[in-house]
Image (tube, rainbow, N blue to C red; front, side, top):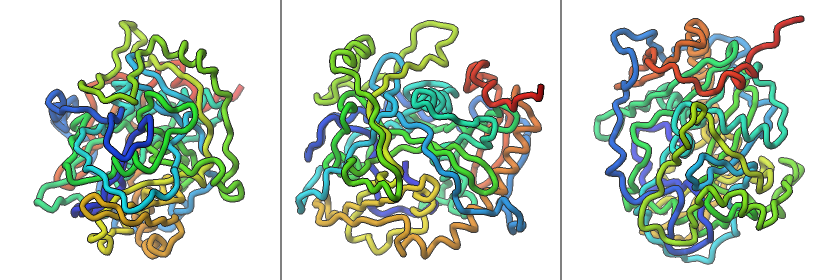
Length: 455
């Protein structure tokens, strides 16, 4: 999931997403990609909305008032959950799972084929169709990891992708090079008294690679699956909880890789916590009915979205299998590949907000010339390239805080029964009411977000 706030081309800056079963320097089947997009027609951005009149029109704040919500320092950071989706017929997550592990600097030069496959854009929606994908895996994973979360205190449950889109709009970067616009939609639901859940919306579930990027194959060549996460996983998700801008956030993002356990520094991020691994036979028994795709073999047909058995509760059916280890925050890595020719045009100010909002400490750049990699540059969140842009990013974050407060007020005013959507078309951001009233959570789980009534 790349956080790019510029409407201009990234010129060779590409990201890889997903998981592989074995490290390989040649392309092999990747569970997060499919072969064809012909069955993924583009959806209309206004589909399912009442568009006769907008509920509200939001504007980028011109100035920021001086009050507590302007605090742009992340405080009280904790990882409350992590998981991987399993390639299965029944929606299933592996908890806490683990990101692929960085194998160390590859032997250079290293020549890779370009990415020519089709990538799943939103694994959560693809594996668990419907609004439940926005939050149910987060709660299930946190519960499985025995994390005590004060859900009524949370203001927003959001993914980094949605924050990226709002920041791009705030920074005035909604225009494309070809004159078009970076239009977007984010569905909203109020759960509890004040918590707003952001539900990611994409026009397509899958997107074809251009054949000019190398991010997926670079990731595959430089990482290996963690113990217990070798088969059938399709991308690692990490969920952070923290205070920012005077509000409490639960932020989900997809993680590319992590340092192996022996490389993490406990002084800057805590020790990893290994979960008891099920015996091989027990794990096999647990997933025997899930019909996992063996990612060691090349697929001739694309994986299909999971099909839940007929049931009134099927929108909320989600199975959990425990395996993997908790990874300390200081071990998280974001990977990217870039043409060495365009390195000087790297837009550090566009990259920094995404790393900051997920507190990702390591940023590795594979530099290549037409697929031949000659160097891996390693940056950290505190490098001068990022810090040089901190002041301008802080201004954008303060404006984001004002916009989020307005969104929360609108959601609370309309109550839990009415669902809303943010729609940005041609740079204009409006709020519409949705026709659907399907909730992202079953009623008993929604009650966990309500403030307890005094006795």
